Length: 466
Picture (spheres, rainbow, N blue to C red):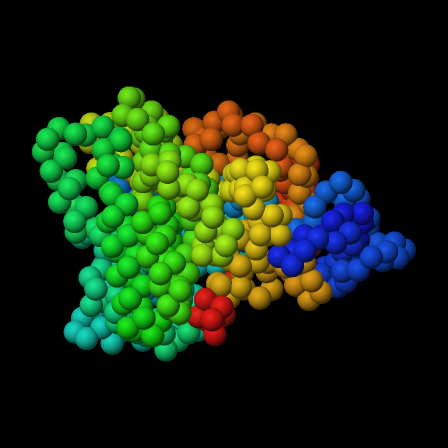
């Protein structure tokens, strides 16, 4: 039986409208006022905003890192995403040096099998093109795109593990350009950072806050500049992940003003958490906020909010990479370099951006939908997602703008023993969520089936520029 959502206000990047939404099976079939109710299952959305399901394009589920594995697997991570209002995630496949992309893809598809609870896509992190001139790896990139993996991740940080040099980056970008694939770049000058880190450890500066002080905003800005211009040389589109500070933002904005095809995201943690407040150098608890890029000084935040409003920053993602505090972060108790990098946030992205963005007047509800739903789907080649319109997947979020909610590890679905926003009171929260027409979250609680999520084959559309 078709389902009719009545009395709600549909929000799109273009505006808001009191209208009904009818979907049948997995697909939206009509969006119009006063759709006849006969023969339909009725959902009363009075007082609620009807939005596309959120799209989080930067997650790390069941990911090996620093001698451990991220705490959320595809089951707990995607349930947490759904409870937070997100119906689609894109996770990262990590190619190990000396191994092929196909091997890595097989590993990650096995991780998700029978566990994913919402739809998901995959990026391919490239660390090795194989022997000789790299022809083997470049051919594999073609194969990845044919299998629906239309974006490639390049690390300019983590030497000897994930970092690649400029020459390899240029080769990958050049090939991506010919494939209309998108290049996602972790932009930090890893070589310089490693020297700073070694010096700090030698001086006995091992506490968590030194992690942040070892990775300067200038190191991120320099790498952002370099990544954008190498991409321009290679005739490729570049997408800077987790941009965290005003220095890197200036590099991005300057490139965009010159017509370069450069996009970027930021994350909630950089918008509302700061070095001064969360990492003043007073306790081991600050290990909870060890992630990369690190927290920045508070003066960076207004520039990031402005860039979200004016379009310089295109997307808000999470970089969700959770580790438990008690038995995982503790691996670096005496050496910040051994603290697993990452934080939990997949469940809180929409809450934080709505409360501190929309409620404060920094963002409109329309811009909120663009940043969290529509733009991510468009940029990453998912035309069936990110909009409330006929023919689109029935990924529909019923958002209560007046709901009061207290964020707490005790009630969250994420598999960590802490929250980065513990005790914060927010106004605005997901009430119900439909994923491809199936009600999976009701009154804020997960009610769906484990394993129902599907792998999405994404289009190669050069980040929406094609």
